Length: 149
Image 1 (tube, helix red, strand yellow):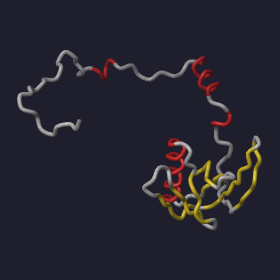
Image 2 (cartoon, one colour):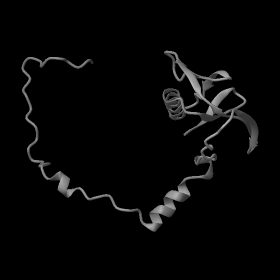
Image 3 (cartoon, rainbow, N blue to C red):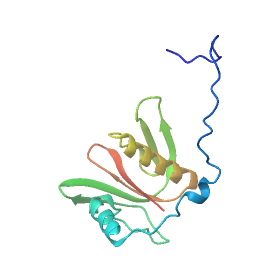
Image 4 (cartoon, helix red, strand yellow):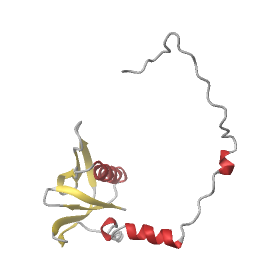
């Protein structure tokens, strides 16, 4: 049922609850504290090696290079030292491409909302700042990983 935009006849206004005093809430909220050694160990153990970036930022002079790397049975093609020329998206679920100089249009990985959002955000930032990127495509022809510095 749609919400009414105007009050209905016979309805009464409800006053806000005044039993909760938030005037000194800023003084009662504790300041952030550093993690204990146990908490740091737990956080480090919960993050696997595959969750961390594998590449280091490029040197000041980076040329265009492409390499095929086999890692864990999966083959990916890395392209580095290129810029994003344009972006294209359609009014459809997870359907966007980035145009890479010297390569052409490349589809952005679309298997999950989180990955799609992260990759399109990086691609748009690379386009806006005209920064060089390093990206990995898989056998499906889609971009699965982007490094932007």
